[in-house]
Image 1 (tube, rainbow, N blue to C red):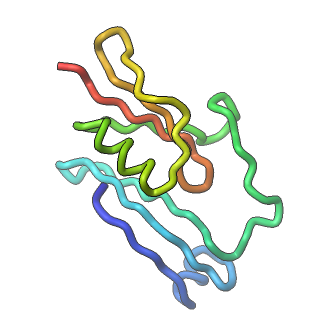
Image 2 (cartoon, one colour; image 1 turned 60 degrees about the vertical axis):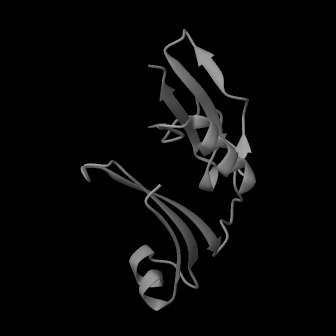
Length: 116
């Protein structure tokens, strides 16, 4: 994780085309700076349709995988923040440690640590 912040106000309203916007953001990036992903949770305005919990096979962007160095520490931090963890950390063929959790706006996040 590269950073966490909240945003609100007229500029944010104009950028996303909504009124009374307040968001929480988490920025994730690669060490070389070549990739950056922001996960955004809208506090306001609320979605008129309400949040639907998609499954891993629901069409659209529902699942993003991230390579992590210390999956136990990342999962512990996410649990402490109240994030929904699908399962305990699983060992996949002695090659990866894997864990799924549900991130902001119900996007499914896969955490993967390569076993050396």
